[in-house]
Image (cartoon, rainbow, N blue to C red; front, side, top):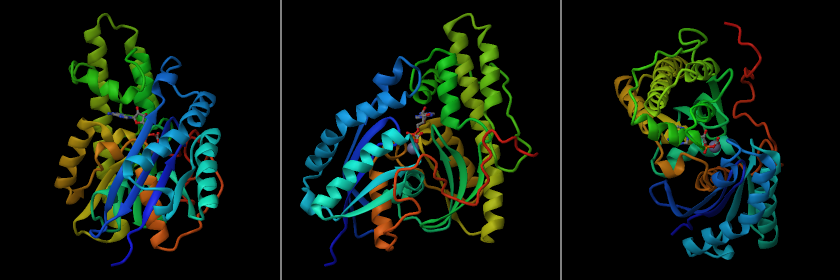
Length: 358
Ligand code: KG4
Ligand code: ZN
């Protein structure tokens, strides 16, 4: 029987210290033998956002323990591991360096293969952990730092068809939660408190909704929440505003996803059933999952959404990307040292803050 590859994944690009042991299986998906995520949200909570130096220090404190836990839980030892995959970017450079250095050191001293991984590729391939998924597929990657529509043509071949021109969707959730005093991290709290509010109580803007293809803009929405928050008189008003914000994000994503699906059809000249994937932290949001699942079925796309454990930052997706790249002999990556900016599609224009020509 052919040996099944087993990889250790390490992720420290932002505020989660994570390690995971993943083994490929006969079905072409993954057996996640362990998936340890140590969140730092308590350290950053009082600042209402991530402080890079505090994040880096917390990674240093935890990374060895997290890796040990991942190995123990998986019942594997370093000698059983074929390769080590570590996030090399994009992210906070002081944080990336920590996971990268420990990953490379273990690989060097243990004589293992070392694969530097693009964090966004980890998210992009994450649906393959649990599902057999064929290329090409449409991906909506929505996290705290990124919001993009991509055509995943193949491994290592991504075409960006839309992006945010200002805030990322997760960033808009986090900033809105801060404005409404709903705590940190914002996404899960907005989702929680929206359940107590009326989503139709506030009319909020949907910037560039009928323009600019499937590019997104969320800054104006957040600013309008700020404006309306000045007239809040009760907790109920806050919950209503949170629910209206979430509902507006849902409307924006629904409309822009229709545009993205049409662009995907044109680009691939293929009208057969294809997968639509949402990945990244925001993909954990139940109301967004529900609305985009419904839309996919209407538009002849098969919704494949990773389970919540693989939506937010985790190392299983990094180990899995490592296994895929190794199997396809993609041992080298475009960046082999930690780097803060690393788009999946080099050709894509950088629109953030550049003033989109509409
Ligand atoms: O992918 P991720 O863990 O880290 C980045 O790569 O950025 O995404 C984190 C983001 C945060 O902005 C967080 O507020 C958001 O994902 N998020 C959510 C939910 N859970 C996490 N946003 C909306 N609803 C959620 N349930
Ligand atoms: Zn992420």
